[in-house]
Image (cartoon, rainbow, N blue to C red; front, side, top):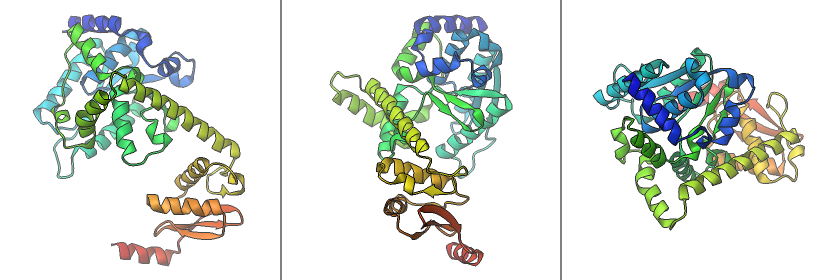
Length: 352
C-alpha cells in the first residue's frame, strides 16, 4: 500500500505540476517570512479535493514533509461510511509518513446536523493547528467552491468582502493563515487527474442530496449556469471576478485605514474624517466600529442601514443597539454607551 501511494503521488505531481497552484499561495510558501517557515497543517477529509491537496504538498514541497500534519474530523453523520473515511485518511497519512490527528463526535445528539458538524470541524482544525504549532492551515477549496460560495452569498446580499471568498491567502488571528492553493483548478480537473493515476478517494453520499443550500447550488444552479454560458469558461470567469473583488476590497480597506477614522482601540469613530467619502468607505468604517465594541448587540441589516444614514448626516443621535447599549453621535464622534444596569436587567427579563 505504501508503494502504491508513493507511486500515485509522483504520477499526480507530474500531471499537476507545482505551477498549477495559485501563484499568491506559492509566493507565500516560498517567502522568507517567519509564518512561511512555520509548520503546515492540512485539512484532510479523504475526498478528492483534500486528497489531491495533501499529495501535491507532499510531492511539491519535499523539505516540508517531516512537518506536515493531516487533520481529520469524524462527524459520524454517515455512520460506518464516516468511520471508513477516517480509516482511509489514516492509511494515506501513514503511507506518506505524515502525522495524523483526528477528533470526532462519539455519538449523535438531537442538534448535531450538518451546520453543527461544520462548526465543530473548524473548531477542531483551529485547535489542532495551534497545538501542532502550525502557522498555516491548507484547505482544498477549488474553482467550483468559488462559484458556489458566490451564488450563496449573492442570495444574502454580501458585499465585496463576502464575495471575495474563499481567498487564496487568508490571514487569521494570532499570525496564522489559511491557504487555498487549488483555486486555480476545477473539481473535474482534480478528479480526472486522480482517476488517471489510479488513486482512490472517498465520496460523501450526502453531497448527492438536496437537503442543504450548497448542494442545491452545486447540483442545480451551477450546471444550468455553465450551460447558459454557451462555451465560456464560467468557473474561470467566477474565479477571475473573485480576484478582482478581493482587489477592490483590499483597496477599500487601505482607503479607510489612511483616513484614520478609528482611534487605536476602535471605540471612537471620527465622523469629520468621513465627510465626502463614498458610502462604501463609511459603511466599512461603521462595521469596523461595531465589531470593536464590547457588546454591539445583534443589529439587523435594516438597523445597520438606519445607523449608517445617521452617521452620514452627522446629527446628534442616540441609537439603540439592543439591551446592552447605544450608539451615540455627539460632537462629531460616534461612541458606545452602555445601558444602565437596571434597564439591562429589565430588558433581559422581558426577552426571557
